Image (cartoon, rainbow over all chains, first blue to last red; front, side, top):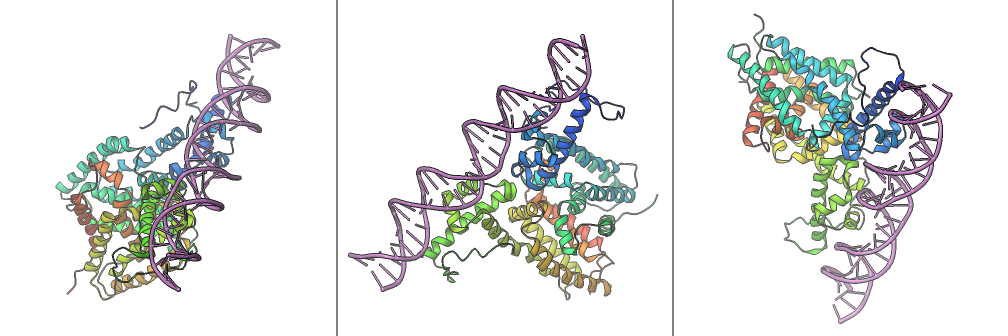
Length: 228
Length: 228
DNA sequence: TAGGAAGTTGACCGATTGTTCAAGCTTGAA
DNA sequence: TTCAAGCTTGAACAATCGGTCAACTTCCTA
């Protein structure tokens, strides 16, 4: 990642393991960091890094501004911490793409999971999109490293499916780009989709139709031969 | 649109019709406005509305900062002027979707045109994406009005294709959302795609593969029975 | 229970934000 | 040739920017 370790200001006794209720120094720290991270995520997602102001984040998190700098030394480190949290969410669904899985199941489940996280966690997706549109300066190492290797690895799985005659010929990487696009659009461009559909927000019915449509495009698009 | 008429500061003798070479007051104005709009487009596309600074736009356009305010009274009006230019580009390709067209041709041509503009004009697409992610505050009237009507109208065309048995059952609006997503991702998220593919920029080969993959997903996805 | 680290916060820093102003320059119409 | 309208621009505006500081309170530990 393109940032120093945030967890080094004071020593971090960390984890707390047990779901201890709410006491002790560590608990205070954990609670405040969470409050700030959540507020930061929302503001960065709407305005991008340079558009977001620490004052607005502090206001939304209901802490005085110097408190932000106490827990995260700079705006940039706060941004890095928010991005780091998002990476895992972003990658999570990809483990549906496994060699031994049936392509129809795997792809349908992947689409469903990605759409589900567009529904329940739209802000991380939007922040990620903002970062990429802005040139991905803060996540370049991740993209060129871990994500690139992961895509190569999953592409190998898809090529395996093709070789086994389970799906039609298709460019594996571009299939993945398509899957990302088809699913994240419902988080990133929710405002457009809602307005066009004449709704205030994207409700369950919209996501049901989205899942049906995206799944159909993908499964028929790669001509999955179901079964065995 | 969500802005006043920019063209009302002094009287605008406008248009110039003929491709007159480069003289006269109107020509100076036209040239400077174009310079500023181009620079503004690039900066807004990278930073969003609130993240962009008029100083950076002025620097990039190579004009003193007060000159910006002479031609576009405020930052917001400049932003509105940039957005307005983009709307037409955005809608243009949609006229491929016509009742009398063969679905296979129409959809393939639509995908190709959209990908072509992702390749040649990525910045307008990115600016549009930034605006939508940020909540679409400046383009809400357009989305709920003109775009909504256009989508309803094109959905009717697609429903016609379905009724005529030319393509399979599918939700027309979500098919359009999918088409937008599949094509604009190559402009909006170019940084991610390039990094993952190990390239510096998206070259012609990438766009060729993108066109093939997206077209395949769409055409097979809706099971076009090629006509005649 | 005393001491000190951890956490909180109002006031303030220089830099940058969008915007205004007034003075000067350029140019086309009379 | 005149001169007002159009255009240019350095200087400066209040407001906000990210960040610092020192004084204060809270609470764990020895």
